[in-house]
Each structure stands twice: as structure tokens, then as C-alpha cells.
Image (cartoon, rainbow, N blue to C red; front, side, top):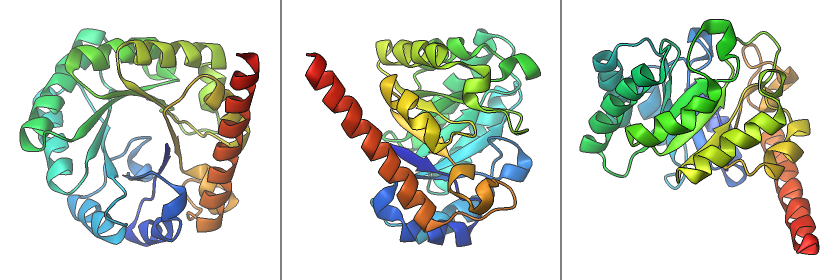
Length: 250
């Protein structure tokens, strides 16, 4: 699945123009961090702006180890119309802390909306910020009752997912997630050139912003419908080629 992250209602309308090419519209606020949380009214307006059959995801933020605070924020995202709730475990330094936060989120969100989809997100560059190891995320998600494990990059300085977690380690992340019956989501300045590896390792959700913004700039650039379509075409091409390779090998 392709997840695209607009940061405004205007950008969400651009996503709506490319709705046939994407699967999830993800609401974030890049100037507040990698998984910066946007305002509740922006989530509501974006929910209204995109086709009803496209789920809306919302980031709760690069959160501290404050389980009650984070649970309330997650519920706010769900009440505002998001069906996918993403939590960046930025301030959790141990798996136990991360599980504590995510259990609160799962209960808060699913008590309100049982069909909501909760994503525990860690960071490929965890070593730079001191949070939980990327390969701990699938077990954190499983033990907390979350639905997916995700990796992104915390510091947006031009380095990318594979710069911090090479493809073979990402493959292990995906394997651990699937072993726990979770979806595996990968993001972090992902480019079209990464899609071959992401397909090969079995990634379920690919998250992008910069790759579909004018000039490739996630902050100054605006999402372009034609770039969304082109990125999706590359995803589909790699999926077909990989499927053909697997079929030939078997």
C-alpha cells in the first residue's frame, strides 16, 4: 500500500486528485517533527476532502514517555476522523516504556473505534536520538496489541531509511512483523529507486512525502498529483517484476 502525507487541506485536495494511485492519506505536520501531529480540525477537514473509501491516517507526534498524555492525543486523532493512528516512540528509551505507551493508545483508540488501526512507529536512526532499537518495534507492537510496526527517520537531514537500517536489516524487521501477524510499514526519505528492495523484502506499506513533492522537498515543496501517479506506477512495476521472478523460480 502507498501512504502519502499531506500537511494541509490544500495538499489533501491534491491527493484527492490522485486518489486512484494511493491507499492511505496520512495527516502530519512536518515542521513539528518527523511524525509531527497536526491540529484536530485539519484532520477533520482532510477527512472531508478525500474520497470516503480512502482511509485517513494521523500521526500523534514524536511522543515523550507520557502514556496518559499520548493516549489522550491518540483518542483525539480518532475522534477527528483518522482510522489509522501512528505514534512515534521518540521519547521511549526501553521496550517496556514503549509497550506502556502503546497499550494506552490501543485501549483509548479501540474503546472508541474497535476497527481503528494502530501503528507503533520507531526510527531507523534511533542511535542518534537514544530511543528504542528499530528491531524491537515488531515485538513492542505485538505485545501492546497494535496492528502494525513502522520505521521512519527522526532527523530529516538528507539521510534516508537505508542509510541507517540497510535492506537486510529492514528485511529482518519485516520478517519479525509478519511473524507477529502485523503489517510492516517503512518510510524515511524513501525514493522511487528504493522500491525494488522494499518490494523484495515484503514491505506492506510504503510511506512517502518528499518523493512526491515538487523538487523532492518535503518542507518547501508541495505534493504533485502527477508525481504520486508516477511513484505508484513504479511500485506496481516492481510488484509485477518481483511476482514474475518468484513464479519463475518456483
